[in-house]
Amino acid sequence: MWGYELYEKTDRIPGDFGVTFGFSMILKSNPKETPVTVAVKRVHPKMQAPSSRPFEDVRELTKALYPGKPVPVLFTFGDPWELAPGDWTFQVPYREITLREAKFTVSEVANT
Image (cartoon, rainbow, N blue to C red; front, side, top):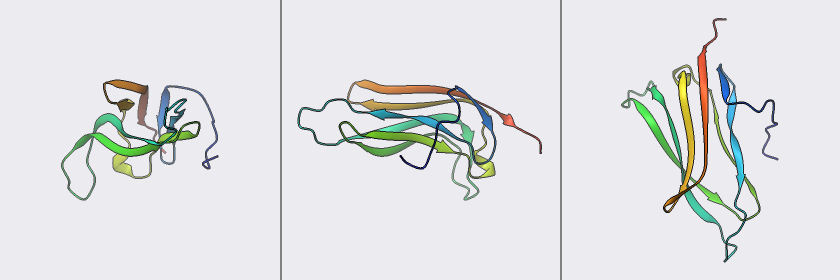
């Protein structure tokens, strides 16, 4: 569907390069059948990009939800500074409600 396949259903995530985790969701109804724009919120342990931006522990990304179509809410560990062990939460708020929330625990980086 989007180039990902479910490997394992779990909330325990190995802190390792290339690991992708998250969920997909479907907006079941919308009276006008038009897309709904939401700000997906990702809360995680503090991490700092090499670009020397300040530490970051909350990130918001805009996504469009189309009625009846699956939307991935994912994160992939692609850089060493992203491997932040601890509790991660993905939230999809809309107006005064949370449409979806998922909590994950990322383990320490495995020694290779």
